[in-house]
Length: 427
Image 1 (tube, one colour):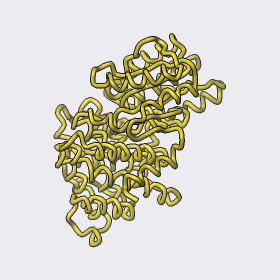
Image 2 (cartoon, one colour; image 1 turned 45 degrees about the horizontal axis):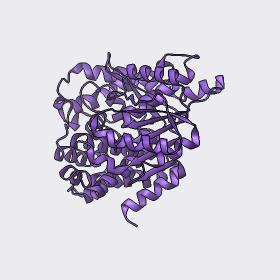
Image 3 (tube, one colour; image 1 turned 90 degrees about the vertical axis):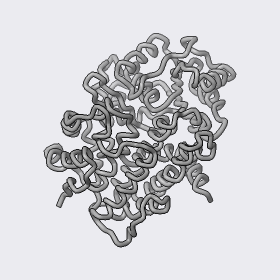
Image 4 (cartoon, rainbow, N blue to C red; image 1 turned 120 degrees about the vertical axis):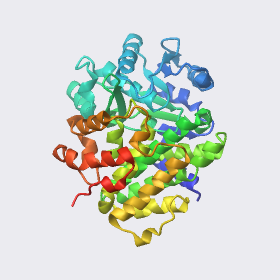
């Protein structure tokens, strides 16, 4: 069985009939919507590049007897799902009262629709989005009030965050430049559709951002795996990483490579699967404080090598397996069998850095235009925020807020200048 076939089978086992993925599957959207209601609100980007996809979805809805309310496409959210867009989408839901929300877009669009659905459904309890940040807060309010969320159908257009499959919604306060997170099974889209051929329209930079976001999901969850979840996560995570490191450069060279596009789509979907088994940690946490500098995937790709060195003594078993993927892809030349602990972590981290270098990604914080030491202070402050505490606890080397300055600060200083020697491992 090929790697692509293995990935397809894993996704089918996970999502069953609730997820239509592959090539030429957009028509499934209308069938899903008809199962869930009679009216649908469609949220999507209105730009010309997405019009064929939006038209196909709308036609599918109409063919299955589902009415659009309003009778137009509602504009989606800007990158990083600004909270202002979440509140704007909430008002559309409240005004038009659709049976089903159909969101067509990348991770930010889908995240914003998830969060807007929460506010539209629970706003009489608390209309402030901050109330729902953290883990399980939406479910607590649903149980207390007896209310329900509207069903959401997520039609993915980008191989990246896996937002169409997961319990996460990232929302950004653009004024202070900080992203926060809703983590709750209640917000997993009821149905999802992803035609991987759509991703051929993704620009090269966005393609790489999304692919390495998928790697970050797989890597961070795998490094943080418990004994109970190790084997399940291993199969998902290593396959996801493998599909990216062996296909990303080819797709960057030939964006029309349909087989490569499918491989990256499957890889990032596996990243979504991974974060439903376990949680992300260090690099994701830091990326939330870099939203004014770079994309999420790029921030995670930049930070993960440095956190890998920090975690290395505690995750040697995982690093040997991950390192072998990078070695077989020609990104590591060292004999990993001769290395252990921190030295093994540095070798694997260098493999990650090499992939970033080959695709023109930044490899240290000072490569980011506009970076200042204030971003490090912001990241350290965010790491102590109780609403982001799950990221500290998910680390293979868990930190508490009172240890952030002692151990996370050196990681960020190392990432600032690209020097692994500055990282301080815990005893």
